[in-house]
Image 1 (cartoon, rainbow, N blue to C red):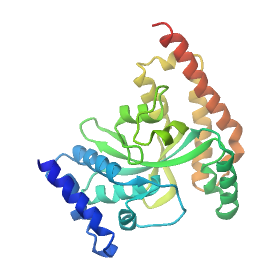
Image 2: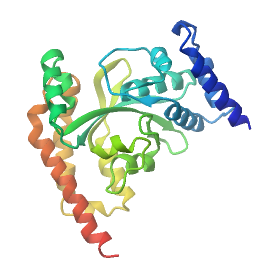
Image 3: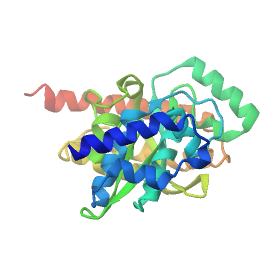
Image 4: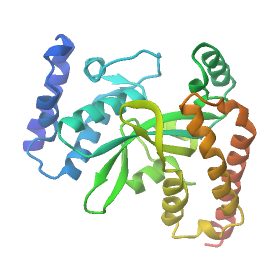
Length: 283
């Protein structure tokens, strides 16, 4: 009953704020209304994610800059905006978190490449983080004190923790996310960075090896690392990382590395086929 009351309170608050001036929205009160009497930081982080994912809609970017309060009033936004709201509310709850930026292998789309090329001409190399068969995405990591490590939290996809994230974003099986239509087109991340909290273009730590090497292999019980294409996958991730980092910082045009991105996609496809041939077809 308590959870129902909390949810009702938050929904009522969300419905009414559209008629208020954003200055009147108290983020701390709003965040506390979502998590209720929960005391565990880990559980607060989980509750906050599921509430946000259930009540906010993903929308395509319109390249406008908005505050967290303005995004809350709109009750939706792109991946960067949804992550921004989560961080603002989690920050009011004193949850340890850090922003994350990724670039993923994506189903090829000429119109996306055309848009990216135009945006690069208008706004510089930072716009090269999306293109013909790659796209950028934003989410968060929160610290799990029990496990002693940072774990993924994705408000756009409603993914919490490594297993959910890997099965929603990286593995070879069906994608289990809130937005399956979007996640099916996002083949696999190849560049993942912790972002400086004061500068959204400054990538301060690469996390691709953690997610796309160690954790992905662990999900499959260490069997991926024995496949013929695995070492090529690892090396290609390492090679593209500095260029992806430079593209986020506006120092390089990632479209110049289209050949490397295409090679990554082909290697991922090989891994998928090799795994199926060696393990799935032998069942």
